[in-house]
Image (cartoon, rainbow, N blue to C red):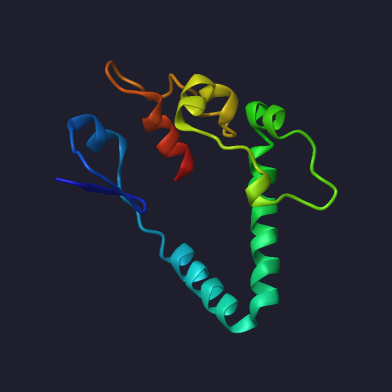
Amino acid sequence: MPVMEGFMIVGREDASMKADAEFHFDWAQWWACAADANAARLDGVEALQARQRRRLQDLVDSALLAPHHRARLGTRPPDGWRLDALPVFRKRDLMAHFDACVTDPGVRSATGMRSGTAPEAAASRACS
């Protein structure tokens, strides 16, 4: 039976997932997102594009806190970051360089892991 983690549905349920994931719905964040989506709808195309550029810049700035992403992305282009120009980042890259990809110093590949679990569990906690 699927369980819900944040907004992601996980297709299997086992004891380790129940121990790792407690669902918490943040109403304040939901309202903030809903208000922002409504404002984007009402503000017009130019405002929506400016919001998208700002959010992409914020996302890349966050990623640049991690050594692995900093090495992959290099310096900011003069005209700003473009989504279609960013390198593809695959799950196997994350698993191979997990500790260098995580921006929270309290999360490491060995954090909270038990026998038979994978770094994906720590990664999902870091993203929530």
